[in-house]
Length: 202
Image (cartoon, rainbow, N blue to C red; front, top):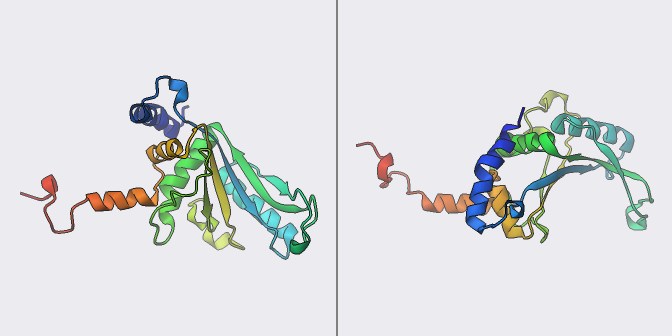
């Protein structure tokens, strides 16, 4: 059965991007290739227990078992040795990727207190976007009474876009609530109590 969010991409997002950027070939239209969710536990005093809890939370949120990440080199200032366990990550593709993005955009991000949108400046110059999630409680799957510690993590969305502008268009059409977009919508809407075109009752 086809994922609903992927169907939205095919039926709505693809035509909108093709029209906006005047792509001549359907293969030029940007797509999301993978989503990487990773967390670090290096600063925790009880590394082994923290790692197990982080892996359990990532598995619950993403629906996939995480892989352990290790340090690539030693850094004396941080008391870090090469090949030491520093966190966990999950790489999502296909249906699981679209399911996760749908829950992130439609359910999790709106639950952040005083949420005003995500930063439009977190692109890497190559069409990929990373946002930081302060803790796992924004995901509805997480049961608050079972949380032993807050686990923050990064979500990196890797796209096939050639530029950050194209990647932002793609994510905006997918529903990503960028903060500058929210400001534009607020500026375009009429003040409360003022003339609102057809919205005002006759």
